[in-house]
Length: 81
Length: 416
Image 1: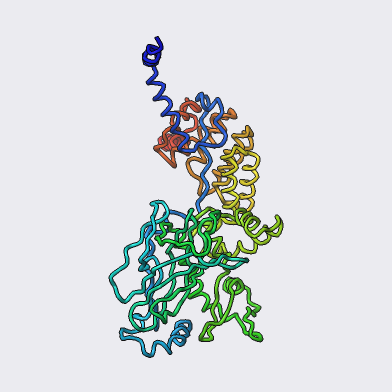
Image 2 (image 1 turned 30 degrees about the vertical axis):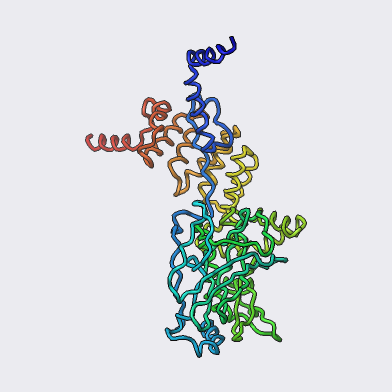
């Protein structure tokens, strides 16, 4: 009878929305990749009773991406005169 | 120009019987366009593979690189043993330019200090190149470990190395006028106090083979400028590195970090980088530290950093914005409202500053004040996705429509 247990479990999972739960996990993992850190929004903001505050501005990098060309410039020719 | 003349003077004995082709034919460059017979694996994030050695028989070829001696004290660099095959018969001058990276095992990668010069007199020569590691915590490989060459993919690193090259090759000539020879010792001797004199004081001065004065930046300043762009070093990490690698106690380590901070910042500034993130002399340093503290949910620490940033630069709107966010998250809504009020009083305030001011006022119950702030958001960003619905909720009767109401009054008055 043990061989019946696994298929029965799978059927039960499908019947009670197992696939949806899997989708839910994928969606939940997405914010972790974005690294949402710091204090969370208050319950009133989450509930939509008050406007959700817009988060802090991010740290400024040492190397501003717009200032430095990705390709290094050519070596200058040696000057002798 | 005097530097080149001096170099040529040093080379004259060997140049006299050099092959034809002019002076340019006597010079090779160890750079990102290095001709090498060895290549390393490159990862797309940091490095690119080198081009295969060219067919140009007039260019020197690097045929082997190995780890040399380790730096032993402050302002010293590691050395790499580089075996070079000289092209042609005559002697050649080899210049080291910026950008080539030599990769060791375990990610111990080194970059040659720019502006080094060697005369290749023999068909094959082993050179001792001064080099610095580009990652802070990788173990230095033992002497003789083979290294491979790749091209750096890091624009910040390239910018720093080229700046070092420029400072030592060009600026050093300009500021050498402040250097005097006292009993064979070269030292800066002037009552003038400006940035050039500071640069002259930071540099180590010596005479080359032709007797000309040469200035070199302190190796530690270059080291920490490199680590700033590759590993995000600030003065804090610099002090930690000094304590770990130089076995310094806390206070001497911090003092040494401060000593090296100014020339390091100068290199970063001259490289066109955001040098103000490096030391606590600048508001931006405290701002960035505040962001880090906020991300760790250390609201008390974040508040202190943002307030310090505002003390140093009262016009720095992002610090006021983030202070407001921090205070709001700490439940200090009145103080948050004040911070956003100050932020929105600055000429460079943006839509998010006004939005947060409105959000804070809304929470405090000042719905009309919130609506006025939200209307300002619409002025600055008519496509703001949220603000219109909050205007509706804060001011359903439209009592805060200032501009149309005033225009209407004037028109009404005119009609009367």
